[in-house]
Amino acid sequence: MGNNKMKKPFGGIVLDSSFRIIIPFTLVYGIYILTHGEYSPGGGFQAGALLAVGIVLVRLIQGADKESFNITGAKAIVCAGVGTFIYAATGWLTLAGGGKFLDYTFLPVPMHHWGELHALGILMIEIGVTVCVMMTIIDIMDAIIERLDADEDEEVDDCER
Amino acid sequence: MQVLILEALLLLFLIFITVCILISKDILACTIIYSAFSFCAVLTYFMFGSPDVAFTEAVIGTMSTIFFIAALKKVDRWCK
Amino acid sequence: MGKVLSTILMAVVTVLFCFCTVFLPPIGDVNSAPNQHVTPHYIEHAKEDTGSPNIVTATLADYRGFDTLWETSVMFVSGLTACLILMVNTEEGKKVLKKDKKGGAKNGQ
Image (tube, rainbow over all chains, first blue to last red):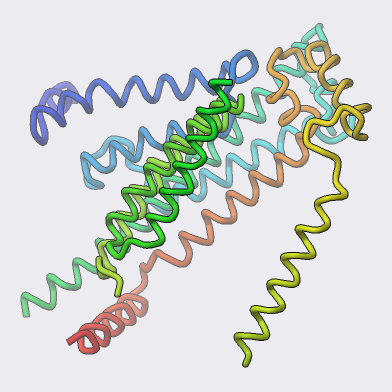
């Protein structure tokens, strides 16, 4: 059943083909930038912005009624809060391990080398920042578009009377 | 030496674009010119040696153009 | 009268601020205080302390990770504020929106 939905074309042929090629590449590239933030230029903020652009493109082309990437306003804010919480939770974990706040040497994870513990701590922080930035951008876009839709619905009601 | 000339040209172009935005009376044209401003800013950051910031500015420039055009639907397009 | 006074005040404050920048060290100066103690330590010890060859990420996420935490929280609060102001879901709010729009249409005509 899912295969039939994916095979139906929508919009014109240009929109359809470019959508199916650009969106997966953008999302995978965003996650690549997140995980390789330690070796090449990148990091949390860049990855969050890029992932948000991918999802905004889906919303612009397909509208809000379809089932893919259906994240609306209230859920997006909750997920942004979860992202900030992940960042703070890393700090609390290091406190529980016996060190200062955000001191990655004391993470309670059984790794042997000192540099690897720091790399793990940086990765956890960047995941939190990415989720927060992505959900904030999706949420602002949702607020603007829903406000436009609310006003247009009232215009239709007035004309019908 | 060539890099200095290129940087100077880019900064002068930035100032010229800003003056155009301030003078224009059509808000939709201002939005499109603002995305050109964002592109020049991307090139400037890239030439000063920070690719992270250039990356983020490119993405945010695209996003802000979409938001401005969406918010422009409810406001008059010509400012007096 | 009020506008002239505020313009003069703005001009005086601007000139004062621009005058004070003469006392700062030039950009990229080797002898300024941060460049002699903090910067060489970060550049030399970033790879072994944090395990990443990217000094920008090591500074943002390891040496100055506390500042990045509050920057992220500021971004979250700004998104929350924009959403709270713009989204209207209750019946009362929709009635207020309709009244505003009708008042605006009459003024325009």
